Length: 115
Image 1 (tube, rainbow, N blue to C red):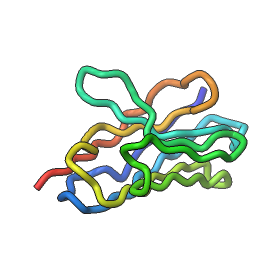
Image 2 (cartoon, rainbow, N blue to C red):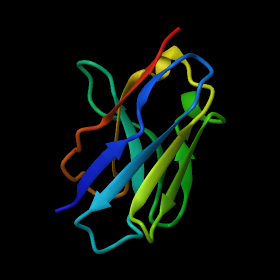
Image 3 (cartoon, helix red, strand yellow):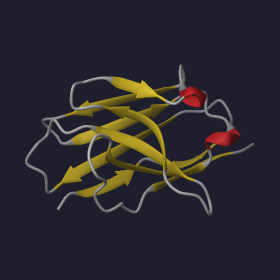
Image 4 (cartoon, rainbow, N blue to C red):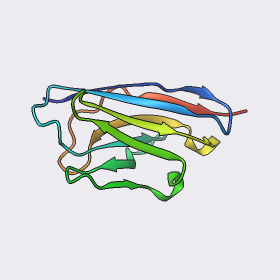
């Protein structure tokens, strides 16, 4: 059973940057597709960016040009570089699979953008 441990969140001002990390444990297939999701209060997890097993990278429109997803298969870690952060990026961010059924969600990492 996969386990995800997210880190790197924090409180920043608009225009700031953060780099999220997701350490993946308990998998044997390091090429599995992974993504970053956000969860707002009272809502389901929503995809933000992902890398498929085939290597295709995609972003949801609100973060295009500002966020960069990357994956280190050797270290079983997924990253999300978040630049030019906006107040609407405030949420708890999680990682999970993108092209297979979800594994259990980790604890997430809180991102707060405010002045």
